Image (cartoon, rainbow, N blue to C red; front, side, top):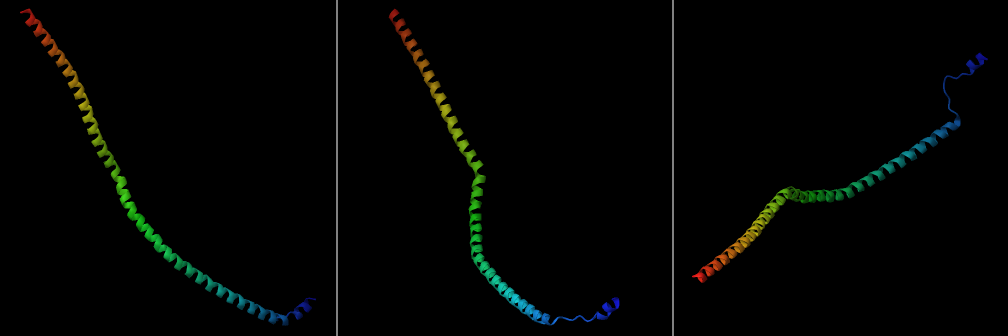
Amino acid sequence: TSEEEEGSFDPIPRTPEDSEKESDDEKEQESRLSEEARIQEEEDAEELYRDVNINQGRGLQVTQNVEDTHVILTPFADAVSAIPGIVHQYMDQHMKEAVRKAVQIQTDRLQDSLQRENDEFLRNIDENIKKVLKGL
């Protein structure tokens, strides 16, 4: 048994007769697959090229928008940073005006009050002079 197995053992591998046909079919299938892969790669490359071309146009527009936005942002940032100064100037102006008006109102009230006192004083003097003159 062991001798039979050893005697029947063939150290040179042999391929069955049908395996050559299968081998040719495999080669043909590999050839078809590699052709399909090549075609797919070409299509992918063309699609990528189209995408790049399309995106180049868009990229220029985006770049332009970014540049335009930057131009717009710079004056905006300057305007924002100028706000405290504008508010300060506005407050100074309006505070000065408010103080001037308050002082004017107080001055007017004081003048009115003093004018009334003065008028009353003059009436009293006038009455006293008339009394003195009647008594003479």
